[in-house]
Image (cartoon, rainbow, N blue to C red; front, top):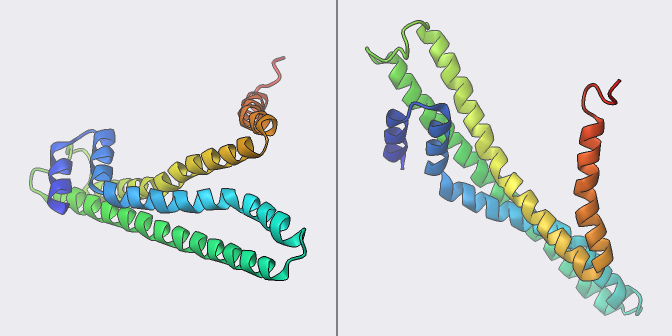
Length: 195
């Protein structure tokens, strides 16, 4: 894995291609993190449904043993949400740290190489500073990618739950919310309204 990423960083000179190469080297960790975060987001989206089921089956009927059982289910769901979040966070941080470390090592080894001053017009300290900032940017991408994927899963689960409970309400929310966001973006542009 490390040799493969080092080979990619030696062969690739474009910033975007370099970022893709180092992210590909951590694809397994990023995918696992995305799955854990998606489990968390999906579970969060289903909590209101679970509370509705608890109210319908236990509270409305006045059945205390059923209420205790459903509260135990709710507690187990929250425990699973917590574990999913923690495991996703660990995987994302580990991927980000590994990518940043390898990228920094590769870039610094290039900077200190006799022919590696990457253009010659920059001082080595400046190149090391740029390498550090670039590595931190790639690390932030590693940390930000899995929650973004999981947010899409959360939206899909919440949308499916809304459509399952009420088709009209689900359509209003799923179509109306993005439309409202577009209108707000247009209205919040600098220079709006036109004069």
